[in-house]
Image 1: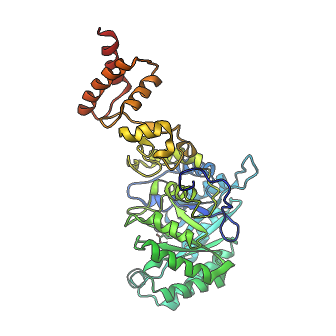
Image 2 (image 1 turned 90 degrees about the horizontal axis):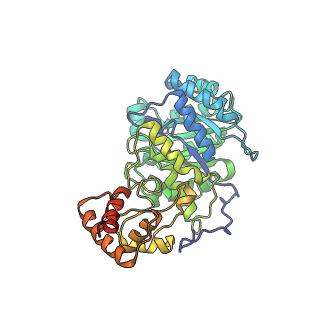
Image 3 (image 1 turned 90 degrees about the vertical axis):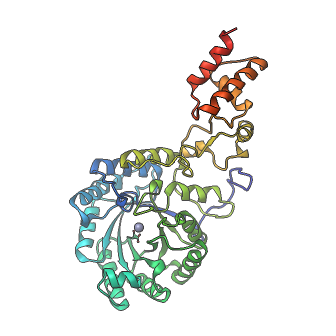
Length: 410
Ligand code: KIV
Ligand code: ZN
């Protein structure tokens, strides 16, 4: 969209090397780590199939060492979705599995991924001082580097597509962070992911950090980001990272994930799409599948979507105030910066309530098949306003009742 909301079609939307930004979806791994979510293999497969329809580039299908169910889920997805061919000849998404920097984890991940046409092993190890002291028995920086390099090399013996994540990167000593990034790239990691594990980063600082790493690594590896939402900044941090050269963004549908969740897929995709005038990057995602994906994930995980959530909330395209309705009825760009149809919705919703105006009221009646004289509309509108003051949700049945009174009471 341009500043006025007109779709932009003539911008060469690419990363500096001409490739689209990779959307790495971790709904089935980090998303499933949200308290209370437990998906069975069939449900995981259903979500993975929808993610393929959505055309995400990478599906992180699980963490195979953690349970037999997780292993089975990754394997089922690798064997089916991972071998899918699109009607237009497009390749199946890359199927990824998570592993700690432990030989058994990596073997298990490789085993689960065997059936996929293209697979990625994602290894991670904590690098911040607090994690090293508390979680890794005081392991030194050199020990962490050595273990990470070994893990990357082992993973490369199974696939040529290996991602490394220094966990809690944003609370890691920056010199050490750069050292470990250099070491794993030298060992052959093809993607280096910079996780903001506890959602601690602020957009400007995070963008600067990512820019520094991108310049240092150059074309030797793709830099990715994985932002948690503890301060509500996961999307802002991810967008800032892309502006500074990150080539992959890790996301979860509806922003699911540990604690306050991960960067929301729908929000970051639409931010990058809508502001292509400023962020000149392309994506492979088919945005028309966003609404369906969001609904399916909400239903299968049992995590409802808040009404006012950006992009996919019930109110995202709903207009209640009379002034807004008056504008949107004439030209939706007055109060909308995205097209609901581009996300797979049927269109903007005019919600009748106490703030609604006469125009919206008359349009609603017309859509219900009623054509009234001006005075009739006036009287019915007064009755509607009285009712709306007492009742927050005005249904078609309420309108019918008002009209019955107006049309047949004389
Ligand atoms: O938040 C995190 O650090 C993770 C890693 C495993 C990438 O989820
Ligand atoms: Zn995470």
